[in-house]
Length: 106
Image 1 (tube, rainbow, N blue to C red):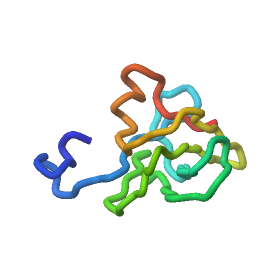
Image 2 (cartoon, rainbow, N blue to C red):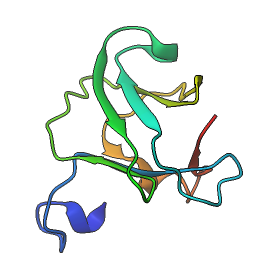
Image 3 (cartoon, one colour):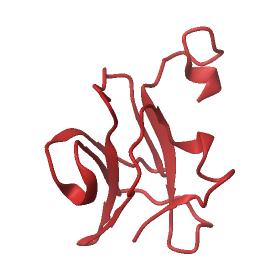
């Protein structure tokens, strides 16, 4: 997301951005929904819902109220995978694909 920050090379600043992959983590997946909940395991309210595009990317320049943290869920074909730790910003690929596994469909 570095190039999509206010002083970056990208044309637009993203507040949430990342890439969703298939179950083996090799191919980007389109049509995957990512929801940001205010509480773990799909509880609380949904603050933002995004859908992956044809290259598996999710992104929004809309303001997202992270507050004390939001809990992502990846939803695909009726299955849901929950992230159990909260996030305080939307730079998904900062960790996923580096220090943790890529974001994959359930």
